[in-house]
Amino acid sequence: MKPACESSAERLLAQPGMQRVPTPKLEIFQLRGFLDSGLCGALIALIEAGRRPSTIADDNGDRYFRTSETCDLDAADPAVIELERHLLSLSGIDAQFGEPVQGQRYSVGQEFKPHTDYFAPGGRDFETYCAVAGQRTWTFMVYLNEVQSGGGTRFKAINKIFQPEVGKLLCWNNRRADSSVNPNSLHHGMKVRKDLKYVITKWYREKPWG
Image 1 (cartoon, rainbow, N blue to C red):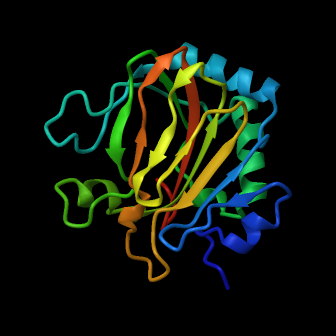
Image 2 (image 1 turned 90 degrees about the vertical axis):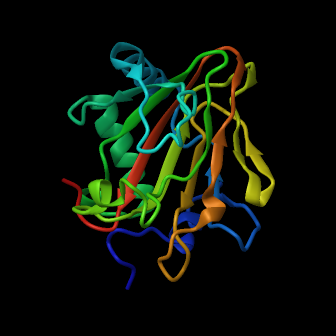
């Protein structure tokens, strides 16, 4: 039986329109039109109202490693409740394993340089971030708008760049089948060249959050 903290390729591919990238290196999927434009607009408004400079656990000494802005979305907001309903229906991951939803805003020139969403085992912040809830398992990210130029998400190991589209979901497994972390999940939130870019991100953990 699938652990409650996990999704699966079988479940995700049962969703009409879901596409899996054909690679043995990484479990990664996209679904166009996952959210409608109305819900995307409501989430953008929340991000605009609550945005602050983004932070990172380990910037490798590069102060420009992550230059976007972030918003911690209120779980009680109707738009967030609706988003969580969609995510639960799609992923099947028990809500107790999910981190709070975050929103990100990228203006012209902003990016998130190549990084993984998991915490490096043995890294300086591993115990701080994983002692209670464990490692991150799945990432679910939704683009909330189209971008006139730039702003793609690049996965170098699979030679694939995903472009922002209103309501498009991108999700991937941060681990391999043996539960070890998968370095092929390294990805780059590329610089926005023209326009603004808005996304929401939902991470899941091995153990209940909080």
